[in-house]
Each structure stands twice: as structure tokens, then as C-alpha cells.
Length: 357
Image (cartoon, rainbow, N blue to C red; front, side, top):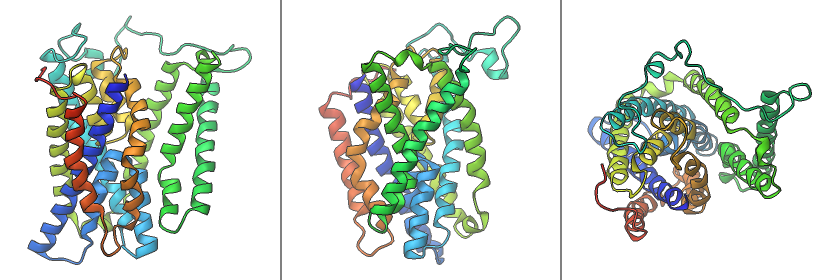
């Protein structure tokens, strides 16, 4: 499991850097060819919108607006995040279908997408138990308990974000709420670790948690699309759409190449990070459930564990993104360094072998 999570972390750094360089290059070429008065650094936000989250991309954009006067940056970041969800669906679902038909998945019990998946509704007699009650229904409702735990962890993340925003230097302080999902995620990982240590992990039901995640992701996607200001996008519509298409295709090809050469569970891991690195962890989980509904592969757990490795590896990017609008930004050299070093790390740790599928 640790090897898979480390592979995902290296891939995250590589994909993030490639997306950022791709976006920056397209915006620079668009300004050279067609002219226009827009900030070419907008291209860097495709990496945040795709590989992080719409909230993170909007947070960086908001810092650029409030600190450096880059108008429309928050809407551009949010728009990249919204388009990332579409890319996850448009590239991920066909890939999942191909994987099942061609036998690329570890569990080859099915050769095509289930009919109930295509219809979205279970047939008569196909209903299954979706949750396991860990609380006594006469005392505490199971769903209410899990929602309360999630709300508590979110509250811990919120307090940390507030403390960060109040005490960190100008520019970096905006990352407090921009990375709110990260603080909540870390709180969740630590909580599971503590519960496991004290032998109380059984109070959490993974099926219930997944159900809440699946429900809330739909609301999040709707909220992201509703929050976009189209007037800020119209002036850069050509480089914006070009960046989305090219970055999505490059991400798809890059992940597919390395996933084919991953020694074990390459398809499941590749599909999961394709959804994650164009959308969020939730979209990665949703794609993974198509080919691995019972999570027999370790990919689902690795999507959570990978963040332990990602955070120290990518910190230099997170800390410098708020300062992109300044003169002499080191962001481009940093991304190029990741593009060179991450493949070397993948080969060094023997994560690249013979093509498996």
C-alpha cells in the first residue's frame, strides 16, 4: 500500500508540474499570436484547478486579486476546477469501460459495465445493503453520528485555517482557507489512526462515509459551476479552452503511460488518479468504483495515504504559487525541476517496469 501511495505522490507532482507548464505556455503563445491585455500566469491555475481542487484554485486566484490586483483570477481558478470535473468524466468513464472490456482490471468477473450502472437504478431484486449501523438506532442515528464526526473534523480544519490566516505573512495567509480540505483531510487521517490505536475504529462505517461523499460531491460540482463569473472568462476564452483540452489530454496520456508500467494494480491506480488529478479525490473514488466497486484493490486507501507523501514533496509549489504575479517568480523553474526529477524518482523506486496491459 505504501508503494502505491508513493507512486501516486510522485505522479501528482509530475502531473501538477506538467499541467502548470502547459497552461503557462498556451497563455504566453496566445498573447504573442493574438495579443490582448490578460495575465499569462492564469495558465498556472489549471494545475491547481485540476490536481488540487476548485477551492484551492480559487484561493490562489483570490490572493492574486487582493494582493496584486489581477482581476478575475478567482473566477478563472474556479472555472479551471469546474472544467476539471468534466474532464474526469469525459476521459475517465470511457477508460473504465475499455479496462473492463479488455481485461485490464484485477477483478475480471465482468466484461462490460453493469446494466444498473448504465441506467443509474438497481433492478428488481438487485438491491444491496449500503451501510452498516455502528450505533444503536434507539440512541444515536447512524447517519447523524457520521455526519457529526465529519462536521467535527471539518471544524478542526476550519479552526486551523483561521489560525493560519491570522498569523501567517501576507500572501501565504490566504492558503489557510484555500487548503481547508487539506487540513480536514489531515484531521481525518489522524483521527482514524488514533481510533485504530485504541481499538475503536469499528465505530466508523466505510460504506456510510462513502455514501455521504457520493452525495455531497454532486452538490459541490453544482456549486462550483454556479460560482463562475463568465464575464471574467470571456476575455480569455480561447487560451482558457485550449488549456483545458490540451492539459486534459496530456494528463491522460501521461498517467496512462506510467500506469501501464506499474507492477501491480496499475489500471485501478491509474484510473483513480486520473479522476483525482483532473477533479478531486472524490471523483477519483467514483471512477474507481466503476471497475472496483468493492474496493478489493488498495487504490482507494492509497488515495488517502498518498497525501502523507504529497505534502512534503509539493510544499515549495504551494508556498510559491501566491507570489506568481510578482517579478522574478521562480514557479516555472520549480515546475521544470519536478518534470525532470519525478520520472527519475519513479524509475529509481522501480515503479516503471514492462508494460502490463
